[in-house]
Length: 396
Image (tube, rainbow, N blue to C red; front, side, top):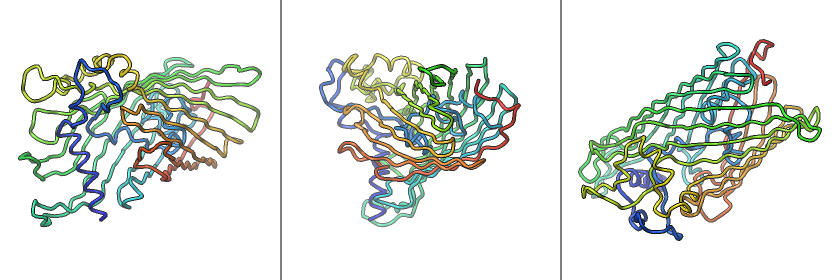
């Protein structure tokens, strides 16, 4: 039974990568989106899974929150404003835990300030789909396989002023879902791609009434990279190129109490599915677009027009309360349009900080009938921060 559920999950992933779904076939370039599902699908969707328990407890909002070692995922430019000279983090996220117990997402990240303006960071994100037994058409076992994916990243951030920084990241993506297997006459091989992140970040101390506060703003264009394929086919799939814009406001209520409000908007910069096939080659035109044309065209290619473009926006709301900079309570909400995936969920979590050590825990609660692989699942992140010295970069 365990292998059955994992096989269903894997087949769903492969189907999304290798064929155009029936739901997409119902959308054409002249129709208006009136409730029909037109979800944007990409390869290697694990790149958009939140591994960080802090952001996971804040509705997946993390573009403009205070910097830590997980900033390489959310916004590399934030790293220049990290308070400590060195930061490390390790996260563990069970996946489909209510069905199986050996699928998980793991992440390790770290950064080091090179000087007061420059920061270097590296990370490894690994997605393990457990062990699956493959069978032939007669049901005879043809061996066990361990589908897995990972992305290695390196990022550089530079502070351009006391309030502003920029960052760039480079990634290598590897996805081995069913190497050696044969689907519709095509032999599956590992998919490989290269990508980059480009980000900016701004923060400044402000006053809200009589409270000392900090305003922060950031944007990150992530996973800008080559298309990927799992066969020798020229029909390649986009990876999840994403535009994220976020803001956060932190209020220092008194010497012991701080509250942060965070808000992120995300949009995939990949073509919206339609059924146009101008050359009659059997591959829809949207899948034949190049990376650059697909990115820029994604702002105006939805078959349903402007209303569908707006529906492609994803919203994250987060709240974080710190007591004495040692104990945190977090909550959040994530919203995605019903025709674009329909993910809607509440999140909650706790944080603990003791000298160099920190621990974050998050929990996801679905708010509609749409099931989520992280339903009622605890996620964990360990953090280690070292060398908070006078000559380390500090927030102005």
